[in-house]
Length: 322
Image (cartoon, rainbow, N blue to C red; front, side, top):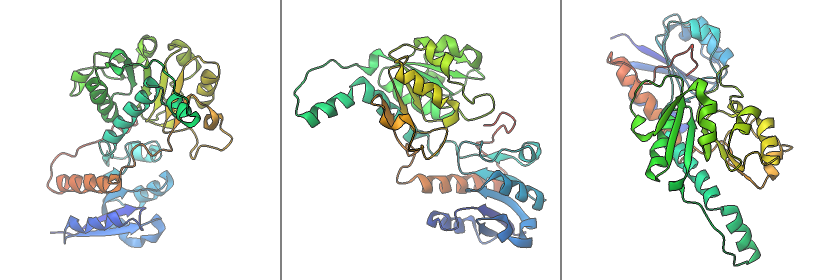
């Protein structure tokens, strides 16, 4: 059997990637931070595991690896690596979809409960030693709208439905698919403004593409209930950050729970840091204790499928961007 050369771009100091030894004796793994470190062996590469690195580095792999048969990206999002050369390439691209969705789904429920039970008020009262009674909301009386009903969106829908919430979801193709059993009503992408006024919580779980950048902006916030909570666990730039700051200041919407941002780390001068009606996390909603290992496990499983000629999971539509 011919030797299989696998290039791993990035993560040279990541211990979890030592597990790639399990790929087998006939597999040569080349780990490098930069393509220039690989040398002439790049020409023999059949598989690229894009652990990290820029689209410019990926372009160098495409140019220097004529035998390349498959590229796997660690993350679900493709916006950091997609380029015309990759889109036009015949090489299939798979992503990390599914590795992080469960934790993100839980974080959305955390955000919903944070506002439904008014945890900020509870914490202030505790700090002030102030015994105060106030009304709270039941999630079972609330409606959640999910913008982007992919793997993350389905994980959110399952958990929301378990709490008895009414679940609405928006996606490009509304033909039936697994996971729809947790959705009360589906909306096609052009019907975003029909869905928004119905929602108590609006969650972005969409990828970043030219079509989704600033998909939620001034007009969209104006279409929501004044009591609406906006959440983001997809990609930061899907939400127009300047617009959501203004919507929060003007009380066009009640609050926001944000894990991702247009610029990361969030700049110190951002007004979001000081807003009482904002729950922030720091792109850590999917950082479970096993998240790195889970990403490696997914690649190992995919490699077995590829090496045995089985169809790959998570094959992306490079032109669509996800």
